[in-house]
Amino acid sequence: MPLQYPHRQKQLESLAQKLGLSRQPRLQWHLLDLALTHPTASTDANYEQLEFVGDAVIRLAAAEFLLETCPDLTVGEFTAIRSVLVSDRILARLAAYYGLERYLLVANSALNDKLGEESRLAESFEAVLGALYLSAHTLDLIRPWLDPHFHQLVEEIRTDPARQNYKAALQEWSQALYKLLPEYRVRESEFAEFSHRFTAEVWLRDQCLGQGRGRSIKAAEQAAAQVAFLAIRQQQMAEETS
Amino acid sequence: MPLQYPHRQKQLESLAQKLGLSRQPRLQWHLLDLALTHPTASTDANYEQLEFVGDAVIRLAAAEFLLETCPDLTVGEFTAIRSVLVSDRILARLAAYYGLERYLLVANSALNDKLGEESRLAESFEAVLGALYLSAHTLDLIRPWLDPHFHQLVEEIRTDPARQNYKAALQEWSQALYKLLPEYRVRESEFAEFSHRFTAEVWLRDQCLGQGRGRSIKAAEQAAAQVAFLAIRQQQMAEETS
Image (cartoon, rainbow over all chains, first blue to last red; front, side, top):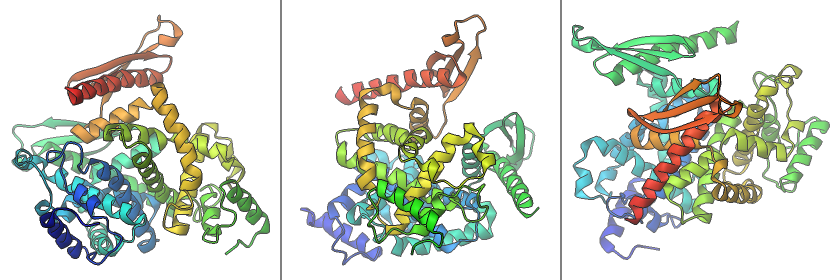
């Protein structure tokens, strides 16, 4: 059913075309419309419910993709790679690729919030996935255009480990294994050179797993998580081959 | 394709019958077989990959169910209820309902680990969902038998809030809103009566959100999380009606 507003319908058709879905009879336009309506534009008919569905859809699409294309990886590696694929950073990048910000109905007040831009893009991208899933009740309207992105991203992640979000990966690992979150302890050194201003340690069960430095708290924590995660992976690989 | 081992095939057919799937041509028996093979029974052909898929499948099934049956709830309530529906405790309960432990191939050494029983059941249940999803690439083999359980569970959760896992709900809320995890501070009092031995406080951004007591650290933390979560929900409801 097309929308009552010809202008909006045209906008959404342009997005559907970019996704290769312009001739898809199953596509429910009113869901796509909702997926691109920010809560500041409508308090009761916005993308929140679709985002709730989309969060599970992207995890499922990533799991299926990894199982089909990288059967040689361990489940630990699946988990680490998926946590990157479904991260706000990557989802916002995909949203930007399709220019979602041009289709998103949002109040001007929210547009001024530059810091919130990444979450806004990631959320509406998840909501679009929710809308496409609920249109077909399969991943048929999603995987044909999403898989090529996954291909490229997985390639990037596998060949350049530093692109991985090690904090997220370490957290998934420690929650799965110990039902605990790693704890970060950060200190600031005024006299260190700029790129080493913060030092972070990551702890789990009274043990320091790694230490890293960076120009921001976040960067230092990521560096510490990377040291810890790679050490754990090394150890696991050694155990598997022994 | 049926399995080569007649005994195992019979076992799996008995489970399929309980799920109402005995005449399902799409059901892939070798996936169901994998889903019911613990890593201690086979290091390279076990349920781990299917569990990785099933974790996303159960989240998607719960999201779709809630959207269809409780459109009156807020997304915050969806999130809180889903975190209960996909918890190890509930998944293990569903696994026990279908007697999965009787179908699970597992080494005796693991069977003696009584503490690990809940995770083992929850994991194999997720893996079964992964196998059923990958057999059809829709939720068609899952929702017909899972929905009635969700109905009953959602009823229980909505009418008796104490059944909710408030720690998980509070964590999802604080991560979504502040990208932070609540922190628990627990102290033990030797002289308190048994049911009040531990006192927990839950903190977020230098603010104590709630305090609770219990006979174990976990119980005290859940009690503190419940106080915090209900207070936040009250406040949100007040803001919505004002």
